[in-house]
Amino acid sequence: MCKNPVSTATALMEGIETSLVAFLAAFNLTNTPAGIAVIAAFNAALVALQNWKSGTVAQNVIELLGDLQKAMALLPIPVTAQVLVNIILGGIITVIGIVTGNSPAPVGEAVHEETQAMYAAEVASMTAEKVQRLVPGFQRSIFHSPESQYKKAWDKAVVDGRFDPSLLLDQ
Image 1 (tube, rainbow, N blue to C red):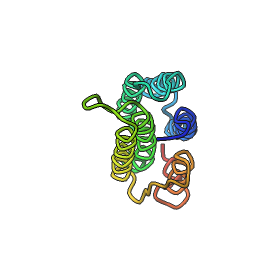
Image 2: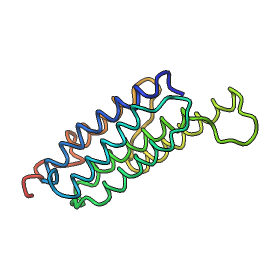
Image 3: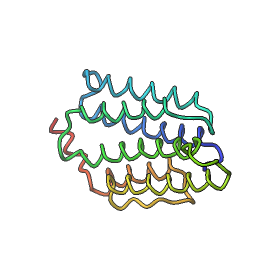
Image 4: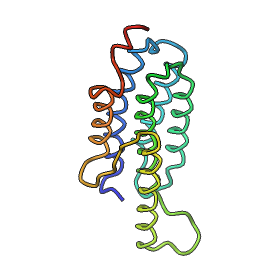
């Protein structure tokens, strides 16, 4: 569980927004119906996240983040840019993991503090696995914020050559 999950998830969303806006602009998608839908879905998810309280059910936030994922899937992007989309989707999955892990554990047996902590650890592990499938080489770190890990993955993809920015000139 995060000490301040709303702040942690919001900071990550701000990092996602920066790369998302740059991505849409680079592929001339900003003012297209698909691009507008992505930005609208992002904004709706961000508002819901900012209004969410840790320890309460985050179903609305999770559904809106799911809508953002669906909107991203409708973007017409070249295969060469899939690594960037995967990093953005990995960031969204991480936000879902943060709010899920900091929501009440599923109802079943009596929920104790230990049960909640085990639930949060299980969600963190499953979230890291999902992100690793999208972004090979990603390693979860308890010593770095999700936002800094996201930025590092994005920068590595753009700067270290997993994505060639010159390909954008052909658009």
